[in-house]
Amino acid sequence: MNPSGISRIKNKLVELETYNYFFVKDLYAGYVSYQQPFKNSGLGISMAFEGSPEFNDFSFVGNYSRKLSQKAHLGIAVYYIHGFRSFSAETNQLACSVGFQTYLGSKILLGFVFQNPIQLDAEFQRFNKSIYKLGLCYLVNQFTEMNLECHLNNLTATSIHIGFRYDIHSRLGLLGGYQTNPATYSFGLIAKLNNSIKITSSFEKHLLLGWSPSLGVKFYLE
Image (cartoon, rainbow, N blue to C red; front, top):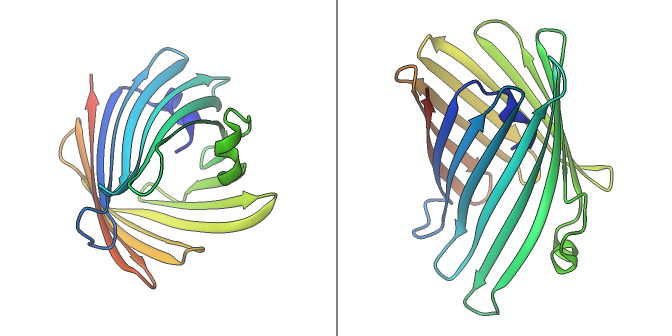
């Protein structure tokens, strides 16, 4: 997630998401967040759980985003991560990321995320090197949106993500995507129940390990 995006939302937002890895019992991820927009900025907090009862990571994230101009936004996020492993000692770590978004014309949104730009935790940095993410969102027409994202480690491309959204109805959209390293593809549906609730359901296929389903709900508050 790009932390600069919060200053772009217009209403308060509560988001819930659950993800099951490869239909394996007790191997899952869960996510809940709250985002609060202001006149020229936005604040967000979120909590996430990933793993199983035997090994897992719990994270708490706080982020702030600022509108720099009519087209540009800048944001920062700070992560606290608690790791539990039944076979080793528990860990507590800090990390951060910086994000930037800007519109190029009326149809292209360019984004940039720099994960771990500052060494907040020396032990954590041994296993989590600085990663750059470059993304581009292109609004093809009023029904179709294309997305391209590239992850770089030491300025070398490590993963490429391609995705699209196509609105087949005013309240129903089709989602699809593909990524490299690890090679996976996905598809799903996004449904707008009313002006306040959106539901997203998707399946991701790892070419070796199999399918992973996910379900997300967004509540837009006045």
